Image (cartoon, rainbow, N blue to C red; front, top):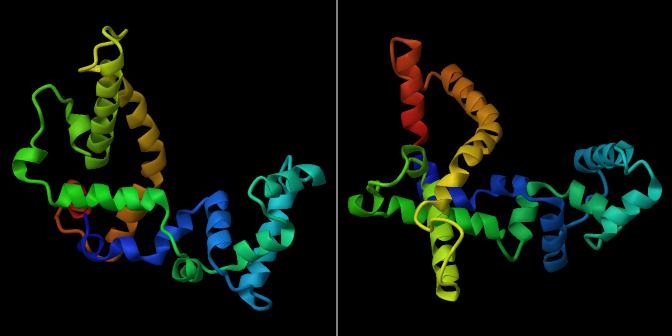
Length: 212
């Protein structure tokens, strides 16, 4: 992982770009987002609003209104959400997204883990132990299974290995999500001259070392 992430990366407003509409609406109810009345932000927000309304089924008026109402929004408040810059949302928000807190906690645990704690257990699959987020999720599954074992004498699965059943499909889904980002970051690092090595393979290996 990068040094910036270790130091203060989780306080970076850029994380708030990942907020869902529901999360933004909830934050707006708890905070005071300034309303843009002019400028590029409003123009961009208006274009985004039109794009939303042009998509099926939101091109049908009732569907669009129902979607906004599901997050306790109307069109004016929706436009206010779209026009608020991410740094403003970050600065005025009184709470942090639960998923961001979870990520920061997971990274903190990983970066402060002792070699003994981080060492792979004999029965672990390599692909499950190499990523600390997957390893953390496996521990949560194991904790949940232990709670189930307290209620039932027998289980229709092996409690010590059932989490491994999810690894193949999870790896596929993660590859879909991260593949494009990895290619983009690799190309940015290449163009910025940040990769060391005389061959493409050496430069790729250096890239992998940088992001760990």
